[in-house]
Amino acid sequence: MWLCLANILQRKLRAALSVLAVGIGIAMLIVLVSLSRGSIAEVVQRWSSIEAQLWIFPRSVDVITAKGDYIDDRVMEQIRAVKVNDEPIVSQVFGVFKASLQMAGQEQSVWGIDPDELSAVTGKHKIVTGRAFDADRYFKKLVAEKRRGRRDYNPDSISEGELARGLELIIDQRLAEAAGAKTGDTVAMLGKEFRIVGIIQTGVPARVLAPLEVIRCIKGVTRARSTFYFVKIRKGVESVAAQEAIAQALPSLRVERTGAFASILGESVAIAIIIPDVICGISVVVSFLFILLTVYTMVLERTKEIAILRSLGASSGFICRQVVFESLLISIGGIAAGTGLAYAGKAVIESIWPLLTVNIRVQWLGLAMVVGLAGGLLSSQIPAWLAVRTDPLTALNVE
Image (cartoon, rainbow, N blue to C red; front, side):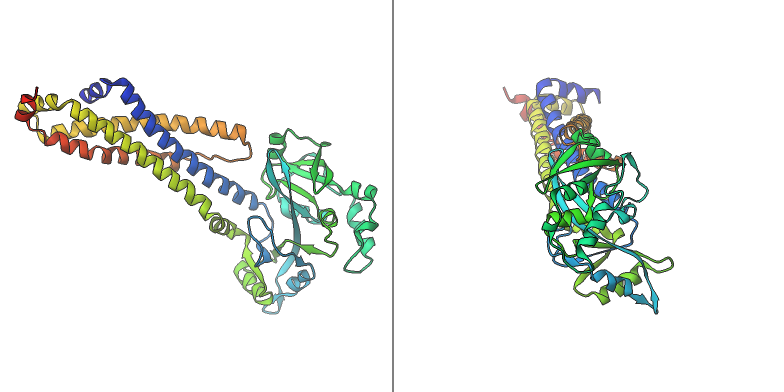
């Protein structure tokens, strides 16, 4: 082992560059895998706060951007009317009207929610500063009055002063910290200035929540329509049975269990996962080609030393092990350097983009270690074969 280390340290700069090359490949593997998987896991975890078992949306809607057709809220009555074995299965159904805004340097998803349904979306998460939006139901009552039992109303009948009372938002703590925002601050959205009235614990499905009727009014959707629905089923009813019954009653809509969101999201962003994996694979291969070249050069430089060892009785196995150990030592150094670079990269990414999640888990570190050792072992095969084939007489006669 000491002989292997001495051989490597004969060319310290070359050894350092080899370790750095492997370290960069390992760091890219850890960071990109942790970023792609960590971000998806974080979104899935936030969705778990929704107190509903089913998710219903038009088949034309993109499940990630939620862009597409709206659903007429009269469908909600059809959902409530669905039965299994002549028994009603739905205990609650509520709609979400989706919008977006720019905050903390990124586009944020905004969910328009009926203030009476807010707790069903936020679950156990509490408002830590401020209050809920439309707390006195002023704007909800105002729109109901404008409709007067009709499906539509004239949005121009709502004055700027009346609308201003409804321009309220709740944001989560992580977004508030990233944007340096606090209650009382204003945020531009849909051409209006919304006021942040509450900050809620991190973990709600959308980082920004707003009054449903306000978003509809500004976007000119005066009929009761939603981007998608969530359905809470009665106790004792199996979610699969409820899903099948509602899907049969509403064939034009897609009905999914909220617990299946992880797989749906995974299918939708599959290309976003594959691309980092391909980049990782290429970088790791290039890194270990660097090891192969380094060890190959070391063997060429030490042809006479290898010949002397062979003439002193060193076996082919001994020579082979020396070359393999040298390659593995470079790999181990690269793994250590790569792990350090990965944590440094995580710190840099989360300081520049605080809403991204780089979740470095033990399994990703283990994967990096396995890849590093396997790569070092494979990279040593050609140099080891060359070293074993060295002919002592020929090598020692070379001037």
